[in-house]
Amino acid sequence: MAIAALVFDVFGTLVDWRSGVAREAARILGPGIDAGAFADAWRRRYQPSLEPIRSGQRAYVDLDAIHADSLDEVMAEFGVAGVDPQTRAELVLAWHRLDGWPEVGEALARLRSRYLLAPLSNAHVGLAVALARRNGWHFDAVFGGGFSRDYKPKPALYLDAVAAFRLRPDETLMVAAHSSDLAAAGQLGLPTAHIARPLENGPGGGERRPSVPTTYAAADLADLAAQLGC
Picture: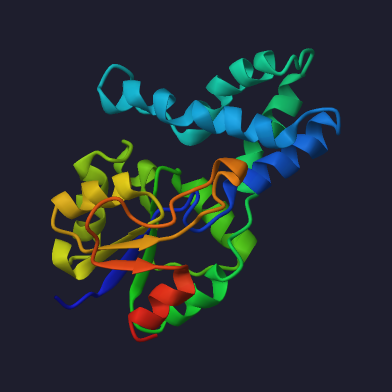
């Protein structure tokens, strides 16, 4: 196996979505809201909202539309009423304003000295670019939901990235903090790397170790870079 490219899950793996969404919810809606719980409630609707598209029951729409659709339910749950369309749109943009985990920027720079890099996220291209520009990250391409017009763990997302780089699956390392993502990639022949993110879900925790076999398991992205000789 000679790895030539790394492709990354983004939400949770590269960015701290919970802190960012909570920060923006508090800024936009005011201090009276439990912003962490608001972020958690919004995120809980994420996977169920994608399933109709993955199953073919709904045509593809991007994550901004998905987040906008579920926002009404979240605001109703928290008793938030009278929010005008401009404020709703500003809340959806919270997902464009997420900060990376502390080590990610330097680790990506190390990895890019040796490998091709690209996000392989459910984000659309504009969202992935917004997060990269906010955090000063440099990628060689942008893959994922907006590129393949579907959502992980559908095989097309992983295989489209491999094909776009003109590589083989065994040359393309999938990097994620979620074992389910890695399991899907591994079934298609991609080597996999698990990044521990025990604080991804705040008090709810995150994965400290993979629950499926992986090629690499790392404490964070800097640790993975070291394991790969960068």
